[in-house]
Image 1: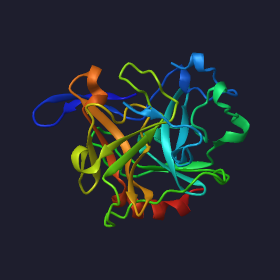
Image 2 (image 1 turned 90 degrees about the horizontal axis):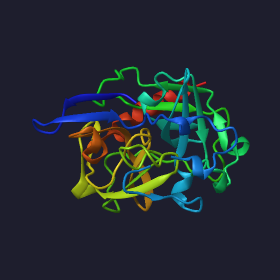
Image 3 (image 1 turned 180 degrees about the vertical axis):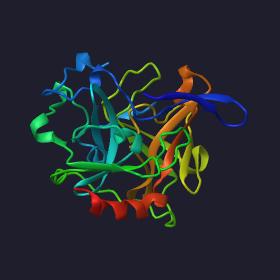
Length: 271
């Protein structure tokens, strides 16, 4: 997990981190499943059950980089391509997509049936890896189609009228700065009008009580258009005044409509 000290809102110094590099013993690729008792998501969220429709729109990504392992979140944007964050895959050797709400044995997770090793992945060529949250988008290509009961999400066009003020976040990240709770899919909701604003390239969220944290990177910020959840943002970084509150300051996501053309241009380049 990369951490840095940089300018926050106003003149206050803040501690920031990439929202997706949740690395621990729990991030190892599972042999088959992990007992729930050995598990150390979304801040202020609730667990998503396998029966929830949202469970079929979000994917857990296990990232292997040398001897290190980490987790991220992703959203299918075609039957074999997953949208995630650039910093998740920038130094990756292997990416595994998990199609389940968690990998505990108690959940019924079956590695052979519910995980796929990616055949290819790429990230935005202008992603610098710096803390300014620019161009932090990537695509992961699967050698097979996503499970038939999983859904492809559209990227919001930035113009259509929203049918709800509710913004839905989903991710497999930690539930507190201390690091517990990762690898369970959780969700929380925010108000589009009260809790966030968009720029030409970013979605900026105030999250004193609930929001994204480490492990949620690459996951979606969903808005509702004509009753359909569409991707407004791709989660990137969080920052707060201190390390102990880093996930309770603000979250920054890539503004998905800005990157829609990039996604469409790059999909044919994936092997």
